[in-house]
Image (tube, rainbow over all chains, first blue to last red; front, side, top):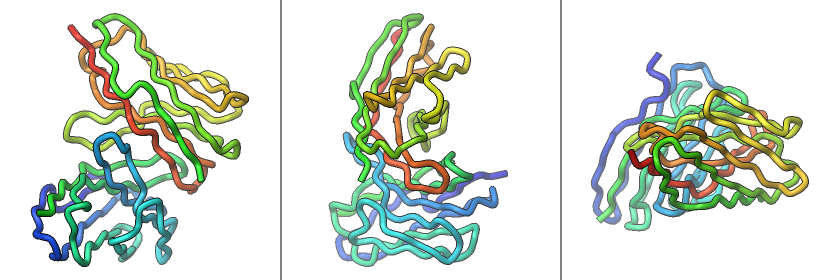
Length: 110
Length: 112
């Protein structure tokens, strides 16, 4: 099992560009999550999907959109990147309460 | 919503000493409290968890305690080793598929 995989590992964008962060899990989990991690801020929830076909906003959803493509895949889209979105992005999936995290995507917006 | 505070933000201990990280939560409905360890360049990984019907849980050198009345819980690592050096996050949720709220993290450095 690969667990939770994320692509790309690292990305540099210019302000105003768009991109999609991809996440996939092979553990047959119903729930999936997107977090951002910033120094001193911990992990903040952007969006989550409790099950296939549903998505809900988390703590910091502004500037992001998500798609739960199927049970395995949950993507995060930045339509018009801003420097404030420079961060490390983690995807997670969950079986009941336990969350399993991917390796992260480091995003730099210039 | 839930608010989780975590202290200290950094902690340095000598190898073999104990380390304690403390967290408080605000929502009395929270009943599940996991702890995650994040090594450099990796995603967080669950190391231990506790539910509100239990006061203490141990797993080898790691233990977690929960005081529901005071709304605080702590992680205790005994006989620390260099490989314990990492960032540790506490979290709280209402269990099941509910959202998890994380603390801001503690960077633990174990000095050989």
